[in-house]
Length: 182
Image 1 (cartoon, rainbow, N blue to C red):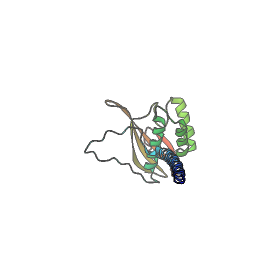
Image 2 (cartoon, helix red, strand yellow; image 1 turned 90 degrees about the vertical axis):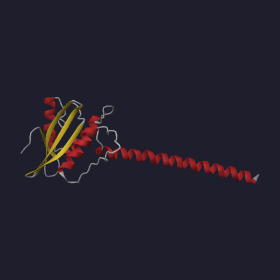
Image 3 (cartoon, one colour; image 1 turned 90 degrees about the horizontal axis):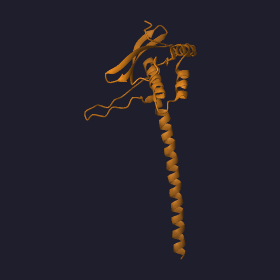
Image 4 (cartoon, rainbow, N blue to C red; image 1 turned 45 degrees about the horizontal axis):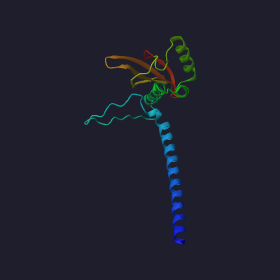
């Protein structure tokens, strides 16, 4: 009988340990998923990935801290993700990104432009692009110009908008124009 009580006691302890491990694993998973989602937001594009062809090479995106083209690409990628999630757009994130990347003076001018034109000033449109490219356009005194090409629509009905984004020497966006400052 003593052996039976010991077996029941061990069995009960084993079940408690398993439940504890399961709870710890579940909590760790929730934390990992939550952290993974929040740290990957700025790196993901809102455009769905095309189906992989058997011979297609993997796509890569790279950047360098401190480079103007990387800074603008990071901003536009995260901003379009925040605005472009049609089921749950994140207005708070879009606002926070503007505060982080734009100079305060430009943010005020952009808000005035948006009020006058009834469109998003960062995108110069009322909707979100399907694709975008970011290209370095070179230094201009203490500033740097980057070209952002936004493609709206799909198939045969696409429209492209080219924006010229000016970064001041402290890597904050000080202008977004439809013509180059050159």
